[in-house]
Length: 125
Length: 394
Image (cartoon, rainbow over all chains, first blue to last red; front, top):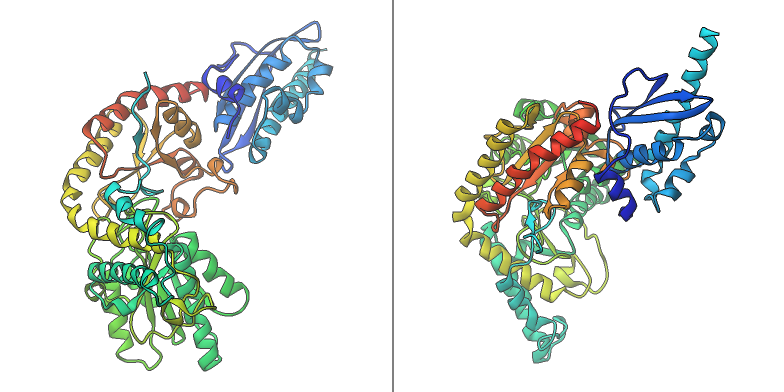
């Protein structure tokens, strides 16, 4: 059902855990569908300097969380905003069709965190 | 070194017993005749089918004439609903009422819903209590003048809880004695055959479904017991096999396998206590070693091989995958493991929250489960739950 890369990220997720003093965070998902994803970011020079996640969810939810943190790290905010769920799925090799919503969840988490960052920034300036 | 495979999903399917397989084998090769033919090759096949019918009848304590072989227990379940409701329309041209429990297998729920949605029947789904059991008083209250079919599963496939079939049978018999239009009482006994009394006289049922592959027999074969005189139409029309009730050339090897498997169930009933002991060890071990784990459903009125446990903040599919990588095979009620993304209707009916349903694991032991198997699970599971909880930030 899952590609080797999905399993690899599930077994050894990158950038896992709560971040101390993040510049922004976002929480997406709900208990009804069973997946809850928290994403933390630190931003420097308009780039994602550090990123981490906490996810309660299925194999696909955990690996897409891990994958998107790898993909977003070091990217400018504009570029990170453009990562699509297809990009995440492709990067993971393949996701079963019924699990595409997990990639979507990861994308939503990242975009929401970036938007939250924008909001805090406008406030301080 | 390849690790030993630990199979704890016997409610999903069981391996075919080797002695059962050996009895089936000749019917693929030497004895391949069509039972409907009159030459000796066909006659031998026909005798094998009738021998299997005797074996099933002997187990259920009914007449062989009351046993019909089908392609699966799902077919048996569909047939009893379709067959009884259509017969009523055919003979009386009026809308009957069906009662089922809210934790039936989909093979009962879906055809019952189909009849309701197409205005062919009224339908009542009975709730279950916190133990996962239906209340007799609720059932009695639900019975209406036009109630004609009640289907209650003997033992639940997910949580293993056992329904009071004998008491329900007695209640329906009492009600039927006072009415002209009788209620047909059906039970899906797929999960019960291995462990519980399936004497249809004791149970007071008019119909009972069972399956081959849940009792160490082959897949693709099931049976429906239909008490003599029960009004029902056939599901599959054609060449007139199975006393003109279920056409299609008989699955001879499968039927032989079902007969042998059910015969063997009786000899294995002694394993009941040892399986229960191992199951209880598993439950006690998990609840002791893993904080925030919760046992679901009644422990008392339950199949001896079933344990159903929720682990807070660790999702079911992830647990299944982690165990699978250690060659341990279990199942989950999590929606993420199926197409719908909606948690299992059984767990919802039991009153579990979304989280408890998503974070649940079903262990179903079997004849081959050993003490070492249970020790292995107890050894690796705490670490797995701990890791997943760490990922989820708990």
